[in-house]
Length: 276
Image 1: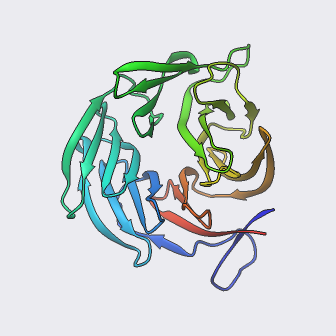
Image 2: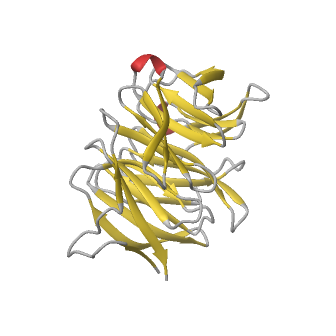
Image 3: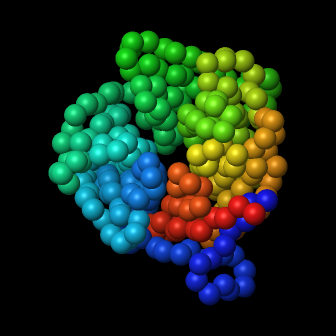
């Protein structure tokens, strides 16, 4: 069983965040906890990328990237930050001393609002007709192509991720669609999805997994965030939470106890998650 708890005095109705991080001046599009969970990276619609100290709830360093265009994805990799912008660039930054130094960049051809997904040397990119193409940075070659198939009208790709499920020692390619469907494939196996289900009545905008791969959450334009248990290629709904401003991005801390949700009201909400 998976539930949300509030560390402060409980109140009726929907759970309240244990902290709200303020500093962005535009909608927060993307979030990522670093390894260990002590830092959180965020990116917003005006090109700003921030790194936060979770304990002090303060910004440790920030920059305006991608020519001030919207930041679609951030990844916190030790003392490096990787960001994807609407300028068609994926940039790797060195922030080891608080300064932002560009160390590498890669151009991509998709200018939709769907974020590319990074895992080490692999990047998953959205393509036409809901297809997902996996590109290998090291070889410069295509490493795979994934599609749903069948006659279901999925609409545009809205969300992509490459997930490592530690408990199962498996890697998944996850895709959310305009139709509200979620597709999950085994990485490296280009066949029908392991899982294919309509989870939201509006476009599915975000999908976050715990480090062990036993739980995941999805957020949609229908102002619902849903929590699922994942086992034997099946997802079991644990709880549903409503948001008045929409949940556009989310990330679990590495221990699965803290869930960060970025919303359309420019704020990041942190929730205390406990398994029972």
